[in-house]
Amino acid sequence: MRLSLARRISQGFGLLLGIFGITGIGMTHIIFPGLHCYACPLAVTICPIGLMQNLVIYGIFPYFWLGAIVAYGLIAGRGFCGWFCPFGTLNDLLSFRKVRINNVASYSKYAMLLGTIFAAWAFADTMFCKICPAASIEASIPYLFLGLARVNRPLLIHLASLFVTLVGMVVIARFWCRYLCPMGALLGLFNRVSFLHLSLNTDHCSRCDVCASSCPMGLEPYEDYDNHNCIKCGECIQACSLDALTLRFSPKRKP
Amino acid sequence: MMKRILPLTLAGILLAALAAAAQEPTLTFFFDPGEVTVTPGGEAGFRLVIENSSVHEADDVTVTLKGPEGFSIRPAPGVIEQLAPFTNEGIDFTLSASSDLPHNRYELLLQVVYTYCIDVSCFQIDDELTLPVMVSEEEIMVSPILPQGKRSPLIWLAPTLGVLLILGSILLWRFVGLTLPLYLVLVLLIAGGLTYGVVLKQHEQAQGIAAVLCTSCVGIEEAKHETPKLDPFTISALARLEEDVELIVFYAPWCHSCPYAEAMVEAMAAQTEHITYHFINVDEQRDLAVSYGIVRSNRTVVPAILRLETGEVLFGVGELEERLLSLLGVEK
Image (cartoon, rainbow over all chains, first blue to last red; front, side):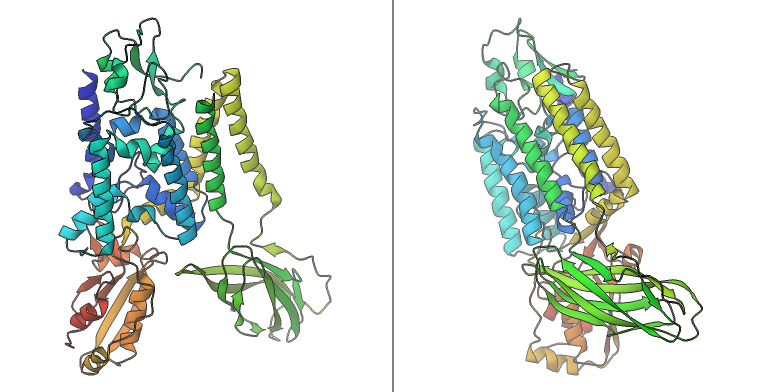
């Protein structure tokens, strides 16, 4: 099976898990391995960032959350961004301009993560949720149609945040995933050790740069194939005619 | 090298931030003496020292006796109106034991309720303390002060060892090229985190957080923190209310708009004897909330106000005054 088809099917599963509430199943105990608003009328899984903020507000050490995040990180790292996350899928659909990533700027998502934690602690509120573009799509807009929300300032803030993010995604492929996603930041911490990883055969590589121009995250796989920004989507593997890159699922033997 | 070390440094900062965010309890309590001896029908004094170890002020710290039977304390309740950050204050209590109490060792149960506010958001905390009491005719040597709410310094041993283990395994991975220790540590973190989290019922807590939709928390509407002031037309409309109405306010302790909804119902009920009301915490009585239909799309929504007679429900706090009047069936 072609890698891209396998990825679309996997993204479909991610989306399906996101809207599984349509079957009538209520909220489960599962922490979602991506950005997916738990306030969504059809959500059956828990948003890791929303939960993290609540645990910070309560002052609870997040054992369960930490276990789940480390598990997701170890299994696939940012592979979940490329293969599973519904908001990542939306980023994918708008990936028209695969410009090179600004490596320094890509650390801004860690600032977003730390800012989210700090804001939750300082204001005792889930501040990130109020600007989260995933929540705009999955909660604000649906609840407006369901009659629970009204046109008010919070809704306009959500819509503005969504608009800016969508424009960003159109101008820069995977804009949200590259620079702003706090969940991507968390999973990125494990990217270099995760079981799902890219592998480069330097004997086959001609450094032609084809892989780099196909990468939605704007990376150069032949330079740094396990970069913390790599979402392991496999676009580079398909672009490479020399079979220099492969996607593996195994523990890494060396750094 | 920097490119590889930076994510690891960030991981360290993140872990430290999470640890810092997982704050200790806001208030800690000490009894002086740690055990009280009192004769049947007699009195004994003890002091409760309350220490505020957080950066936020604690307000209306109220201490009441919950049990057991046969004991009473003065003052009842003991109150500290304001406890500034990083300060401590004591309340001197006099404990009385009734004359028919058999000689025995008892555990005095004290309830401490207080609020602390972060910016405009206030939380009510409910704590329980126990003080050993010996009812005896003989004088007994008192034991040293027992800190309550303070944990043994050993509690830091496990996290410290854990952090050292993580750092050590990362260093072995980066500089020696050994991956096995890092994988072992990560697997240990997963197994330990999930298992201990489940033991602490954090999975249920997580499910509870996600299953309750607080309208102001995800930005469906703006949180209201002010005290509601009724319009004069609302007051006159409420005076025209003739039928008895029973309202139930469903709230969650962490919901920012719920106190406003509760205060609005209280304010309206104060204007007429026809309104009775109850508050239900959905965190504690989720099933009850579900049975009353406080659910939209599988989410228990708070704040919600139910009129028991008609089963009508109001969600949120937007234009609440007008909507409540409409729920009550009176016009301005």
